Length: 228
Image (tube, rainbow, N blue to C red; front, side):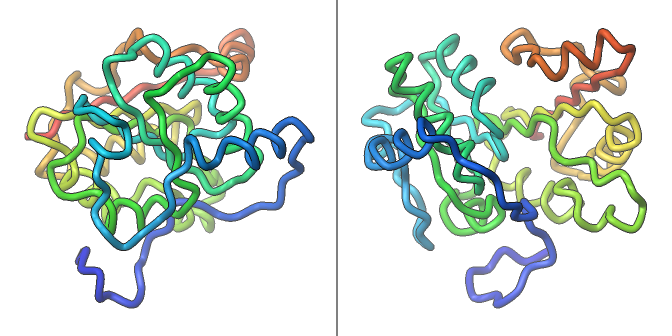
């Protein structure tokens, strides 16, 4: 896969855009807080120190949903800076509202396709970690091409991690977990931290959706690889 900016097409996308309702509170937070927490997409390398006003470990989260886990992790680990990338406006508004309520200053948000953000704004070796929690599993076989986790994306992610940096994925769909593990094992820049699936890292909170699934006997698989 080429990551040159001159390429006019790409074979991977980080999302499928869906229409979603935005609440009054989410819309208000989005309108009022975007200048505080938002970073506009650009085809130039991002200056992390300028964006956060300091130099700190840098964690990227792709597809943060409504932002509950993002805000929780950022609050628990204030010594690290978090860049959340999400395309859906209700989730962006919801996370901004959480950040303001908790007075968190270590999170910034880019509302854009994560593939383009990685390619154009994140320089190689810039990231200490990447979080991708519960991406859409697209369970039907004919839809597997829509899955976020593909070999091309993993290669791009690995190139943006520092040596020793980590990639943490979680899914509640077993077949998708097996798909992810197979692709990661084939990526030569990454090495598994476990024999197969990892014990859930303490920093990742258990969501209400996840807890409900576990109570129903559903599984959750965490996968953590390091950049070598």
